[in-house]
Length: 126
Image (cartoon, rainbow, N blue to C red; front, side, top):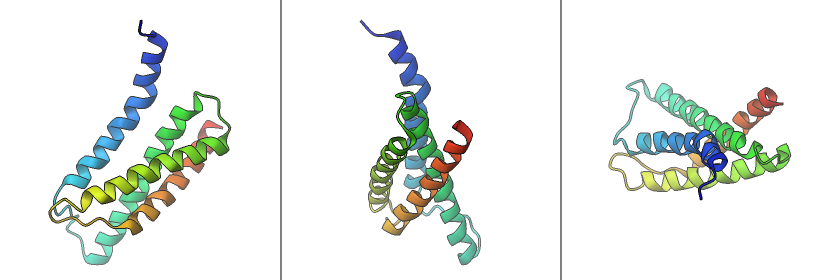
């Protein structure tokens, strides 16, 4: 028998993570995705996008992990591991997209965004 409480938890806490990962994956699949701005602005806008995307993803991971009443240190570490795995796989995926290139420097940017997102989550969630 399916436990309605577990189904509710899945839809409220895990589906948002999967949807957001899908958004990131979709954007990574768009060939030659550019803002059309000058090169320095293009570079910084891409990095800001990475920071934001992964801050949100880390916050969603933390939100889901919080229901297990883990201390923030564990939530922080588990969220970063999840983001690291997804970010690395996303950069690997971009190696196979025409007009895109996987850049593992971006994994570092993603982790910085995640740290920022987790710190914001801690401030908001307490």
